[in-house]
Length: 305
Image (tube, one colour):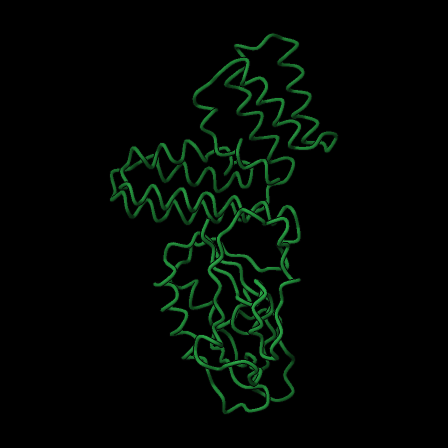
């Protein structure tokens, strides 16, 4: 899948001091998953390598990117404009991996220096370039590099990009009420595993499609991406698995049904890995084919858990 990424994370020596940050990304675990489109916003606006370091200053949402040594160097507008251009150029990407704590690319943990001398630094700023991107594509799956070393966060990001790629294909084929319902039917149990609240909200959105389908689709996508951004816990996985098991109960023998129920309950308590409980469901599905369950994105997504 095509994914944009901060260029320094791919090994390009484009940081302000001429170094790279290749070691700050789990390349082995991501091998074969993404096709990277590397971008360095500072180089993109002509700052060069090496270059004067910059930082964020300001109050509230009015943040500026200025030189550390020369506060008169203000590249905020240039970075924002470059972000908007890249959002158009890379409109087909299915996700973005940003460099953490970068005054350009950080998502939510960038140092912000107060303009009033003596005021403490904040640690909740968002990079100027990243902010520009998110304004253009608010539902795009995004993540910071360091969090991808966490297997759960990594799996969540991969599954979000897969869902986003599938949505893009749906849009290209023409969004209709029927196709939107079919899309949700495929993703409903994956969404349930991540967030029951978003699962219910998505279902309510699709309960009345008399409104313009495109507008409903935009709200649905935002709900889906927000829900899938929440890491699924064991209780969420067990809930989704129990619901899927219901489609097979009448066809399974008593001992087979009890065995699967124990496996799913073991997933919930931590006695069994999620993947093992899912494997038992897949075995039952092999013995008792069900076309609806075969289409569930959850059964593909669980490989990344």
